[in-house]
Structures are given as structure tokens and as C-alpha cells.
Image (cartoon, rainbow, N blue to C red; front, top):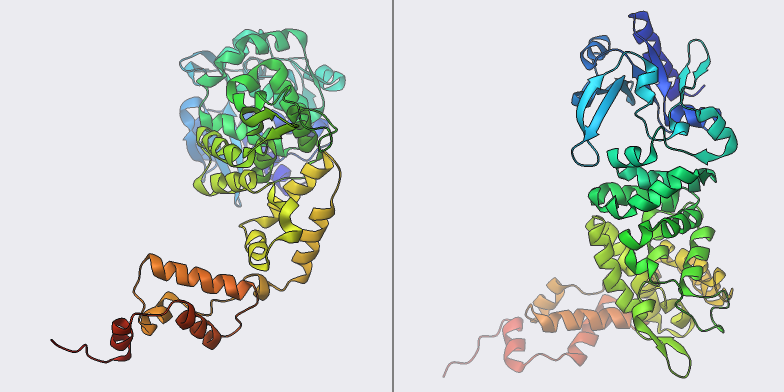
Length: 452
């Protein structure tokens, strides 16, 4: 038994000892029945938030208005929720009225899907199933508890959660649930962008990204949330480079080949060819001129819409903008190549290129070249310390401004090309290629300008 499970069991034990009903509930029970180790544990009880807080002095009343308390045990959190029966919603998420319930049956009847409506008594080692969850787990089915349209209206995020669970576990969505999901797809915009982002990132990183995005497409959710991605369907590509088919097929193949991606890499994979539909041209062959740059602008708009952080947005946009540069790597100037492999998070750029190749022509020549260079070039060669700084240039008599920036860039270029190796050589390079005016030179040397 894991340490977290032991702590959840201890919470149940204390609640029961105080005369309350208490069970493990939800996703943790589902995962236990599937033989998976739960990432977190939830407890359902007939104890009120105040009663829970009395038993656990370190309890945090973060959601007490909805009957939810966080119990802290040795640094771990166990969420404890009072049995309740919600009545309608104000905003497609929060219940209009929360009433505490007395029985676990009433509590689970308000939850989302049958596979998440199971209860487990760890003290008696007994499962309780009031919603047919065990049968649906055995059959591999995602089914809402009760009327599908009502469950989705209570919390529109459930539209995405149904897709994510179906993809993650390889299950099918039950017919009535699927019909209600498709009919409600247009209402997904009622959910906050942050919650939508979190679900999409989970879909991309939980190991079943291709199936998740196929279900998003089939349900109509993709066209609502990511119309730029939906437009990839049917956009042909030159068969000599992309024998696999259109842009949507190519992107799905890349999603399928991802292995434990970071959120930024996964989003980079999803969006790397987002610029192809608007740049499609049929000339001597199919062309997508400037699609990487166009795609970078579009990716930035998508990231803003999903409320990604500035750092995450910069990383995703860079992945889209630079994904074609690998084809030029073997013939890049030394300085250009070193700057390329010095891009922030370059390991993600390298992995995106590998996936791009595997999902198209299969030629990993450029990937191997770059990887070998990364493994053989010492860091001090790739990112050498500066030979001259702005302060050095001021000492030599140069004034801050655009010209100084040009000088520093020229020195860095020569250094990365291997032409400059010492500070003295760099200063000589500057004096030769960027000579100071005589008056400025005398002033820097300490000479007083002649009076009139």
C-alpha cells in the first residue's frame, strides 16, 4: 500500500471512529479497480466541513461552501467532501444550491460518469456500486450517471473529460452519452479558458493524444476550441515528402508517436503545421511558403486564447517557428549552427524534428547530424563566454547605442566562427572594423579637445 493510500485510509478511519460514514470515492477507486496507482485520493463522508475540521486541525477550508475540505497529513493533501445533492447551475459549473445528503447513494448520483461513481470502504475492503460503474469498467464504457444532457449542462467541462477518459483508457463512449456530447459541443465555450487548457494539456500528455484529438474532431469540439487545427483536415501535402497523406493525418501520427512529452513539446507538435492551411499553394508542386513563420503567429494567438504563461508561449512559438531549420543544419555557418542549438529548450526542438520525420518521409539524417554535434561539441564551444562586453567598449571610447549592439554582434559572430579566441584579438578586431572618430579616440585616451 502506498503512503498516500495509507493516509487516505487514516482519514477514513478517524471519520468512522467519530461516528461518521466515510469512503474513498471517484477516480482513485476507479484506478484501484484497474490496478493503477492513483495520483490522489478523495474521501466522501456524511460529516460536515466543520466536523471534518474539528477532527483534522490542519484542514484547509478552501471549498467549504461546496462541502469540500483539504486535509493535510505530513505534507500530503486528501480532499474530503461531504455527501451532497446539487441542484442546477448558475454558470455551467457551480451549483445553484448545495444541499448536504445523508447517504452515499445520493452523493454519487450527482457525479459525472459511472466509472467515477464507485466507492470503496478501505476498512472493510468493500466496494460499493450504485451506478453500474463496475460493469462499465469491465465493458470499457464511458457513461454519464443519469441523464447525459443534464450531467453535461451541470458542468460543460465534462464534455472534455468524457473524451479524455475514453482516450486515456481506450474506452468507447456510450451511445446516449455520445449523442448528448455532440449536441452540446457548442456550449464548451461556457467553460473558462484555463480549465479548457488544463484538459487539453492532459489529453496531450497522458499517452493517448491521437485518440483524444480524433474524438475531439468527431464530436465537434475541435472545431469550436481549435478551428485552426480542424482546418488541417483535407489539406494535401507533396507526396514525395509526405507519403502519409494530408496535414491532419501527419499531425495525428506525430501525436501518436509522442513519448511522455512536456506540455510545451506536445503543443508544439499539435501546432507545428498550423500555418499550412492558410499558405497552401498549388504551383509546380504543392507549396506552403513561409508556413513556419505564419504558423508561429497563429500559435501565439492560440496560446493566448488558452491562457498559457509567457514562458510557455515563447517555447511553443519557437518550436513552430524553427521546426523547418533542421534541413539546413549540415550547411549552416558555424556561428548560425551554434546559435540554433543554443535555442532555449533545444531538446524539445530536436524531438519535434524526430517525430516530424518519423510521421512523414522517415529520413533521420539531419536529426542524427544535429544530435551527434550536440554530443561532441563542448558547451564552452557552443556558448563561449563573451570576449568583450559593453563596458569594455565604453572603455575603448564607444558610446552606448545601436552601433554598440552591432559591434557586440559582430564580435560574437567571429567568435562563434572560430576567428576570435582571446579578448586581445577581439579588441583588435573591433578597432580595425569599427574605427572611432579621431575626436572620440582622443577623448577616450584622456586627451583634451583643442579649443577654438
